[in-house]
Amino acid sequence: MSGRLRGMLRAFWLPLATRAAKSYLAGPALADALRTCRGLSDQGMGSTIGFWNGDADGPRKVADAHLAALDALSREPLDCYLSVKAPPLEFDRRLLAEVLERARLGDVGVHFDSLGHGDAAATFEWIAGAVPLHSRLGCTLPGRWRRSLRDADTAVELGLSVRVVKGQWADPDPPEVDLREGFLRVIDRLAGRASQVRVATHDPPLAHAALSRLRVAGTPCELELLFGLPARQVIQEADVAGVPVRCYVPYGQAWLPYSISQARRNPRILWWMLRDALAGGSLRPAAVGSRERS
Image (cartoon, rainbow, N blue to C red; front, side):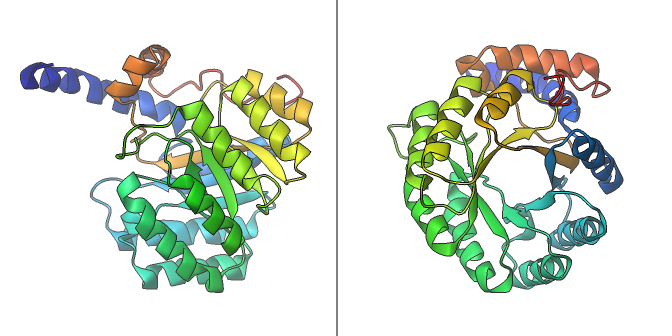
């Protein structure tokens, strides 16, 4: 593909993807996320909230958003924890300590999300420094990264809860791992060893396989979903396995990427993006509903 054609495609794709991404946000404000989490709680589900910052938001603003979320969660009777991303905080240890102290005082769990492969090493160094500051910490491991097997060992040693995802960003060291195979390799590495594993996928057969392996190993586990993605079938797998369901609820800026390369591998992404863009964020397509109706 020529550079000019690629640029034209991106010019078409990015505005549409940004519009579509709004379908996956509770809204721009913390109050929107909390309202959504209360609704999920009424349906018997736990939740996770994560502030999606804008490009112009500095680390102080991002930290303040996390502090406000922690204050609110400490007052709410919710099974909910906070997800944070290290790069928007510029790996600032003072800001990290501030966030973790507030989380400790409010007895709210803090989870470190995964971003690009290049940020993984620094993120785990950050987490290691956070362990003495708060007992309720977690991390995310992408199945497509080969380093995730080593990181799984580190997570077990540090006593972290672990969210396993297929992974959006590729491993820069070829050959790349098959997404499902990589996911299950990480699950197997954690089974029988991790304090808790959150199976984060909307792929029903993959959820079935992962939850089954964890249950056989006696590892505490749950299914974690992304707000706005189709969920009915995969929730049925959680019901069969007898495990809790949790929903990740983002708020803030709509930046969820629909990458062109992903759409080439999975044409359904193009359909989801077009559908969500036409909905204009006003609808939640096949959104998480009550487990009784699933």
